[in-house]
Image 1 (spheres, rainbow over the protein chains, first blue to last red):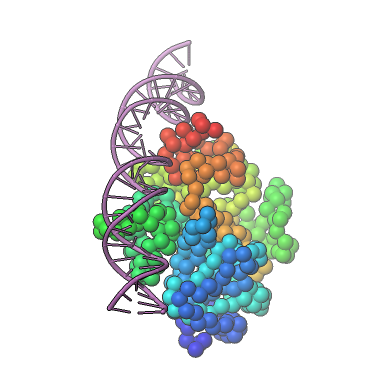
Image 2 (image 1 turned 180 degrees about the vertical axis):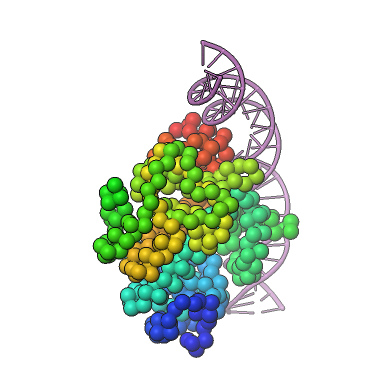
Length: 187
Length: 187
DNA sequence: TTGAGTTTTTGACTTTTATCAAGGGTTTGT
DNA sequence: ACAAACCCTTGATAAAAGTCAAAAACTCAA
């Protein structure tokens, strides 16, 4: 049920007309575990809202798969660089488990912005929140040891520890699988 | 001269009326080297545009001063977390050299957004660019050695190498002063 | 259920970077 | 010009994390 997805639950300042328009553009995607929402090499055409489940963004470098971010239910995700610049993505986004996501295309989103400035404002405010979250992640990575980075993840996104593999978590935390395994052994 | 600051040079899609309004809010600040634009512990009230010179954002942790970012002429800078959330800043922003910056207050910027949706769109687009730049920085930091991180900085922001001290650069690149010194010795 | 394939853990060793300490330059104020 | 303070470099050593290799544990399909 599109209406019940909870997307606008914590969002104020958007007119009902704008909400309706936005929701009318949404397309539901039911994805099995490991389903690729966006693929490396292709332009990312959609912004996703995760209603249920979780996802992982990663790219491949020197045959190694490196996790850039994990996204949980209630969050938005896309291959930002590609989505914004309309150029091929260097990252792939896949579900970590059976998930329900809603997507809106780039064009439809822009249309919403043209029709409803209040929708553009909301998008802007969400983007600001994502920006400072990213900034915090960068600052955090600067002065924490491998162990502290793992403890922080356990604290903030414990669900990830359950859903993702050691390799996926290790690359996200910027350490080897072995190091992560040893850290876990000591806790 | 406010009109000649080049702020809107590469920006299209903003009406002249919006530009005029924005410019009318700008306040010029001529700062000597080391002048603090924003202070840790206080709410960051302004968004800055660097017309001439450069700046550094940093915070203090365990008595060490850790550089978060360097900003050059033509770029915007603020203590984003504080500016957005209206809570005290954990970072300080200071000029790296004699600089000319223009600032607009949070309130005036919001007023611009209310009056001119095209201005809000432009802000949103700039924010998106800053977001992907930050994302790239995070990805980059994930898989590069200390030496590669330094070479990358030399490539992308050579001016920083001249203007900032070894300590400031080292903390930005997430390594000790000694490691950076040894890297420089070998190039 | 079994066994092939995969993922995770463990061990020995190496590399990278941090830490501590000392020395050499620069800058700055008197 | 001189000394104090600061900044940068260099060296010795230590700690953290990476690499390589093999064993153990788990997964899943025949």
